[in-house]
Length: 286
Image (cartoon, rainbow, N blue to C red):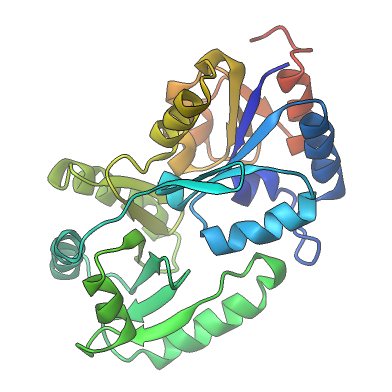
């Protein structure tokens, strides 16, 4: 049996979506069986540490977590490591994007606030749309606070000054064209700001501290536990999971993922609980 299952949440463990139950019963059953048999589950996600509490409560088993794409690492219930970005680093990226692409909003994640949504201008329509979207997320909703970026003493700017920023999300827009745009902007940002980590997921670009990237976080996690990479299997579905597929030969991608993502994966599954045949090594493809 593989010793570790490092799994993404949205689109992976959270597939199919259960807006009131959070995780499909068959997925919960699979994780409980695996953990009870001695396996370790490491949640590797762009979500906040605060949201992880919901997942752990639902599965009702001990799990490790690497949140904000690995900026925060918790093992056996203890915070092992936290990485942050400085105000200076964030200002340089924000100013560059403002001048060239004019994003609709930035979303800041810090220790004190899981999600601060900030537009450059007082955007009433954006606030209304976000509130509607948030309402219909039900159990998947992250706690959020709105902030006006134009206010020097506003929440967004004050939290930047703390120099304890775990993650910054860039929201370009709602239309489908922004998915393709994000892929190109992500490459551009990686080249220009090589001291930070960049990834993309649909309409959002994710920015995290140096080393806070999924494959790097998992490698450090395994090193801490003295577990070989071949004893770990990774599971994901989106653009920010590609580095996991490239780094770990034992990998599984969800069948509903885009072809851009699936081409990097070794194995494709239709249902999350189908991963059981790989972690239990019933499938000799590994």
